[in-house]
Length: 189
Ligand code: SF4
Image (cartoon, rainbow, N blue to C red; front, top):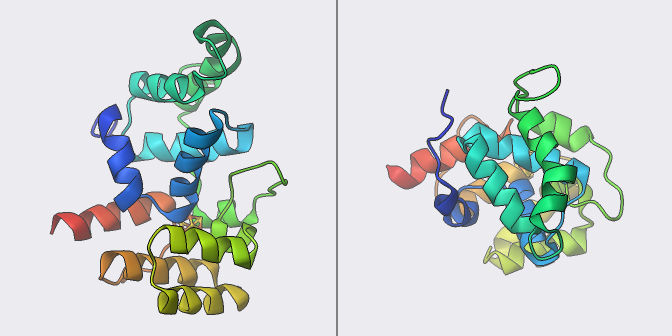
């Protein structure tokens, strides 16, 4: 297991360079909203576990993220159980696995939710604005948008990977944690 291989203070820099769009968006959402609904906490929390964040660091990460609106007592009461549960420390003690792209793409996302796959669940104008804010060149954004409009969400993600890394992801994108590993392989090469 890779638990503990990523430290809490590495998360933000990694989110800029190696998180796939679905997870980078959740990181930004938590920072600006100081809250995240259940669907996002599950999708993002299991991803963070998958990249190697320990349970202790995960609890600290979420406590910090919520702290502006939620005091420590309320956090412990309302949210900590679920985080420990995702690490197999509560309830049936199942060690839950991070969600695949397919599961994320198929998930239902309401108007107040931040989870899901941006290529599938954001409307096209929002997606384009988001990619622009992440410094993707306009020509690249148009290529991504073309794939999205054909329903090729994972190919659009692979295109984004290529544009942001200057290298192909040869295997394609099938899982956010696989995206992360591929990204780290490219950036550390
Ligand atoms: Fe995340 Fe997969 Fe969508 Fe990429 S294709 S943004 S990794 S769910």
